[in-house]
Image 1: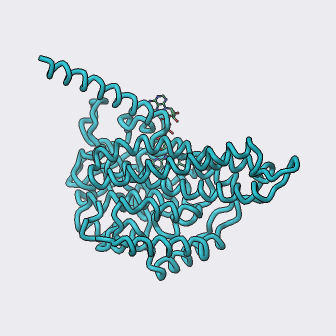
Image 2: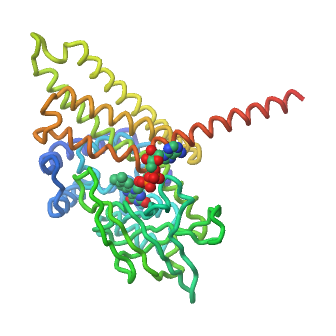
Image 3: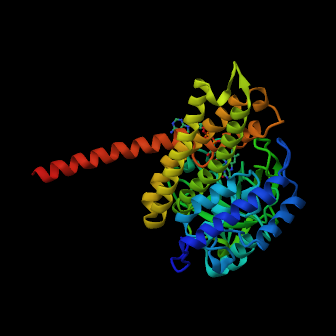
Length: 406
Ligand SMILES: Cc1cc2nc3c(=O)[nH]c(=O)nc-3n(C[C@H](O)[C@H](O)[C@H](O)COP(=O)(O)OP(=O)(O)OC[C@H]3O[C@@H](n4cnc5c(N)ncnc54)[C@H](O)[C@@H]3O)c2cc1C
C-alpha cells in the first residue's frame, strides 16, 4: 500500500478532486471519440501531457515512483471523477491493467524491477498487460487450471504457453505472466510464479486480436503466444511459486478500482437520463414526473449510493487489513458490476430510441461495462466463493460455541 508518510490533508484532497473534475469536464470530455469509436493514440498522448502539466497524473502511484501517492482510502472519489469519461482513466494513467500492475509492482517488485518497470509505467513511457487467462481447457474462472509452464534451464526460466484476453497487449512493453512452476505432474498443485516478460522477447507473438464489445480504448484483448520464451532469474516478480498469493495482492484493489471507474461512468449515464427526463414531455407531463420513470430514476440513485458506500468501506479496509479488504472486494465487485449495468440500462430505457442509437453515448457505455460482470471474477465465481466463506464462518462459529459450552 502507499506509505502513510504520504499524508494528505482534507483541503489538499478536496483541491485534487476539484482539479480532476474540472480537467475531465473541460479538457477530456470535449476530446472523447464519437460513440462506438476508439480513442486515437495522438489524442491520448496530447491529453496525457495536459494531465501531467495539471499535476494529476498517476494519482495512485507512490510519489517516489512519480505519482501523486494518494492512499487507497482516497482513491474512490478521485477514480469515480476520472471514470465519468470512458477515456479519463487512460488519460490520467490509472486504467486497467496498468493500474493493477503498478500497484502490484510497488508492493512486490525488487528496487531494480521498480526502476526498470514501475517508473516508466508510472510516467506513461511504456504500458503493460497481464497474462492469466488461457484458451480452454486452461485458466479462466478456475486459475488452478493454469497450463502455461515455466521450467528452469541453464540458469534461466523457459516459459511455454498461450494467453488470451490479455488487455492492452497490442501496445504493451511488457507482460506480467502467470505460469505454473511446481510440480508439473500434480494437477492439484497451486504452485505458480509471476514473470515480467518483454513483449519484444524472442518467442512472444500476438497472433490474433479478439474482437469484444468494448471499443473506446485501443490495445485490445488479444491472444498471446509464449513459445519457449527465455527470461532471467531477475525477471521473476517477487519470489518463485508465490504467483497465486501475488494475484490476490493485485486483484483485491484492482477489482475495486474497476468499481470506482465504472461507477463514474454510470453517474454520467444517470445525468444524461435526468436531463432527458426533465426535458421530454409525453402524455401531458414531463417524463421525470411520471411514476414508472421515477421508479427507474430512484432505483439508479439507490444503486449509485449503495455502490459508493461499499466501495468506500472496502477501500478503507484494504488500507487497514488487506486480507479482509480483499474478501469484501469480492462482494463489492458483484454489487457494483451489476449496479452500474442496471443504472446505464435504465438510462438507455429512459432515452427511448436515442438510448440505443449512437447519437447518445449510452449504448456504448453499456458495451463498455458489460464485460465487467465476467472479468476480475465473474458474478457466479464470486457468489460461489462468498457462499462458501459464509458457510465456513457458520461452521467455525458453531464449533467455537460447542468449545465454549464444554
Ligand atoms: C474485456 C475483457 C478483458 C479481460 N482482460 C484480461 C486480462 O487483462 N488478463 C487476463 O488474464 N484475463 C483477462 N480477461 C479474461 C477474464 O478474466 C476471463 O474471461 C474470466 O476469468 C472468465 O474466464 P473464461 O472466459 O475462461 O470463462 P469460463 O471460465 O469458461 O467461465 C464461463 C462462465 O462460467 C460461469 N461460472 C464461473 N464460475 C462459476 C461457478 N463457481 N459456478 C457456476 N458458474 C460459474 C460464469 O458465468 C462464467 O462467465 C478479460 C476478459 C474480458 C472479457
